[in-house]
Length: 107
Image 1 (cartoon, helix red, strand yellow):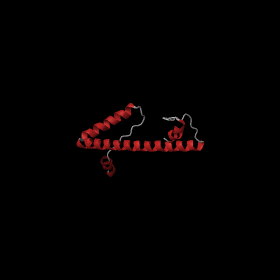
Image 2: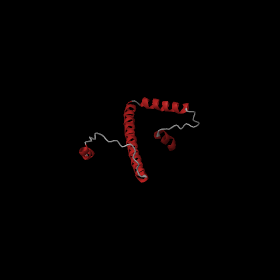
Image 3: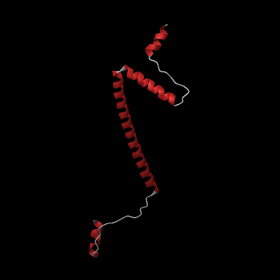
Image 4: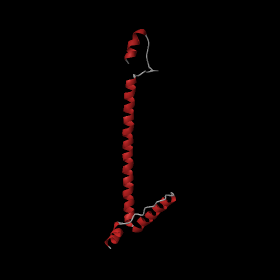
């Protein structure tokens, strides 16, 4: 190292240098903090996007399973209603297929 070379004429061997206390200007500290925050936010967005991707894949797989058996869709519907009712909600909305609603609209 250059420090070791500078101390060789004095017969001193420098193996390691430690910095104990560094004082950074306030403006530099703010710039470093802003950069770190931007990095954290970017990572959070990537993690969120990966989570969304995994959720969409799971939904696709679930839709393929449900498409194989119409009764599976009805059971899932009833399970969802049961979950909603367990939460002590005062209002439950029953979604109806459009073909049923259109049948009543024609009359």
